[in-house]
Length: 223
Image (tube, rainbow, N blue to C red; front, side, top):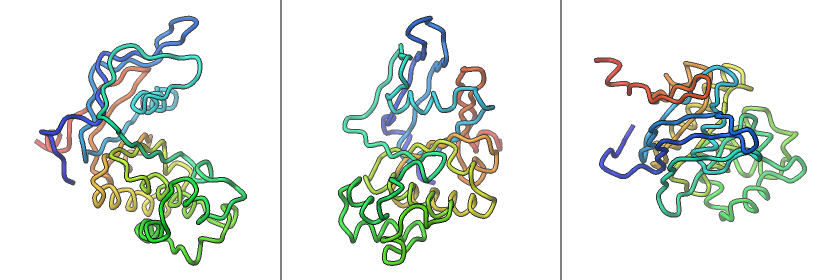
């Protein structure tokens, strides 16, 4: 995995708190969290700890009823791709896959074919199918294709393997790993599964009761 520590972070949260607008209750506290170019991070913590809220803070798009204080710095014209928990949530249920990929990303057929091939899908075979005709693993790979077709510098994935069986999980992680490597995109994945972090060789971001802490990287842990 190539990382460029001398480059400025793609996104940097400093002294950030996410609070409810009405009651000013603190939902998330982030003392200092930089996301470097071409890096990989696994956001881990129990259900309800604030993992999804942290992903929202990184994108700068928060749910209704909350607001963010502190500093969020991002590189200019930062493109962010997003992979949801269920691939079906990324697509229109009635529109053929190829038409959706063109409509959403504006990519031409050659580019779509290239990215689909990278995730192990064939445009000619699947392009005319609708989402209901695909398996869960295939839909998740379509969602990954949508995220990467826009040539993002950062891809954020929210529990992308939790709805998959073991084999589909491993295939999805392999696809995420290969695409992030070949495109140079940074990758931040929220998960409760330690194997996700291990397979992606990702740095740990711990979230517990709304408190965010950056764990050691792999080399430091091994020392």
